[in-house]
Image 1: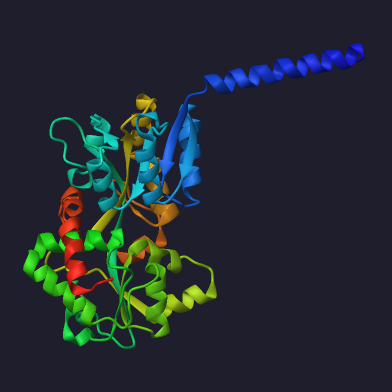
Image 2: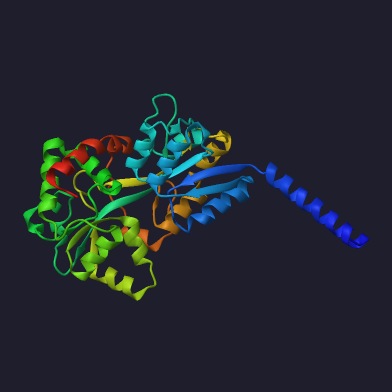
Length: 347
């Protein structure tokens, strides 16, 4: 090797060592996430720019995240866990996969109904965005007054009209858990039986499939999370616009209990090695900038009520009355609800 080549090689080795040392000193937050939205990339990048904490993300569905946490046990590198739906957060809490957090920032910004019971030790998880469980209908075949409550999904007027995804999907389990709180066991089971009797076809697909089934005429009424509908409304695809033109939406139970609202939320993992950074990340998710990412990027309403989204689809929905059942209560109700679903044959 010539002298100049040796000098260049030595310089490169020094540079590589310096970069490696810098990376080793850079704080890292290990994030296990069940959120799979491209718009969240900007959310995470902004946190790193603001704090210098690099995010190492592991993506899986909710069941995969929980299974991984359980199998890893105390050796898990996870610091923060992001899940979608109250039922899943409640399940993870009861499996001992989270640790309590006491944070003045989170307690001030996240409403008590959107976090787990404190019990004086701190909350196990926090909701950072909300989505409403709305009813869409074929405006050429159905009147809004025929579907303006969840209860009317079981009304004889809707015989052969209703489409839903699986009754055991967490989105539906959470809605049914709220209905159990409103109606009591006997009326809830009777209502679920009525919904099954009114179905146009067996449950299948996801929420977007239900919306498209209404537009195609396969059914006339369906239940969906609001952000799926908002996504179609903001789409530039002509086929999606044709779907939107065929349907209308109602926010159910405005004169009674209010529309069911679910959450996407986060928690500090039970065996987090970087607890301080983890709490800092959760507090960041409650900031105005992060809340606007949820609203404008994925069509979810901010959990922090003072933050107002700049999203034309959300704005078109207008204001609506939300139910006040605590998310933790909805989670607890999922076990008896699942038993009801089995008895009435709601697949």
